[in-house]
Length: 338
Image (cartoon, rainbow, N blue to C red; front, side):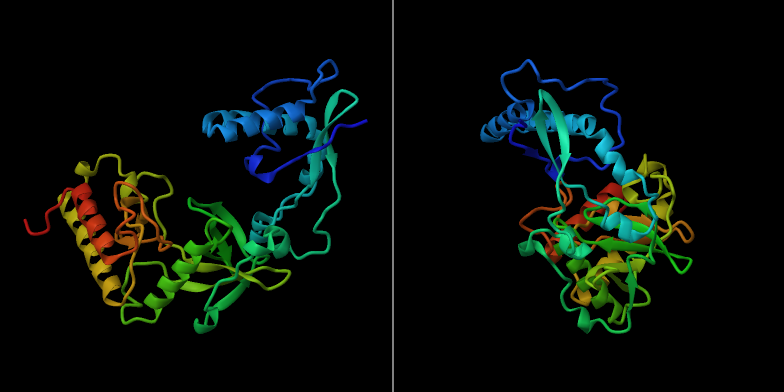
């Protein structure tokens, strides 16, 4: 008889775990001579680590569980890789899911496929399985004249840094940046929409060096608005010189060039404040260097703060932006009045 199943939890899965080798180990999970099922043992180890707030041990046990799942379920998981990915945004945001449990059967650990509990549900409902965590961007009716793009007509070129899905994409043969929210990034995408719309309807719409708001992303199967489309700011393809943060030695950059950047940053922040927009997470890694013009662009209006550049107390305030600006100018090693 199989032991009570240990259900696979999605937070144990790194993105590449299904196809990655298990640390080059050829290991057979045979528990026929043990009095305790391996999955029960791992559950106990994980619970103990959590009870003792031992984050490092919990991580170690989680890796063991992932290794066990990948090895035991190799043949089952291959079902997910039979179809060639289409390369569209829909496939990235709504990948196929396999529901399974981990159980010891006749002394051997096996992954057992389970019925899909969300059969017949929309992709959006499956993505946000808990109804209490289903979101939709607010106030989109106030944003006029923007195109809505289906997730299936947006081609993925590159996944960029950031929470949720921040992606360089191709739409109608033009490059854009798309931001689609998940549980952790809903507030950030909502705030970015609010800020970029406010900029777009201001007197500085044409001159402020920030990404322009282009449109909305909607789920192909049910029309839910799940993200925004922005102007893509071309920058260096390598880390070096793509943002201010990735300049290896700022002192090697010509002083006149650094002063130009500093003046542009200061002007942009002043104009933002004038129209009632707070940048938020102000720091060098959120300042792109446009590769064609060598001008700077402020990006990421999702809010929050980064230690060393802002504080919790001044997060998303004018004071916080000014404090960060002073630190950015120190980083650039410039004195505009000199």
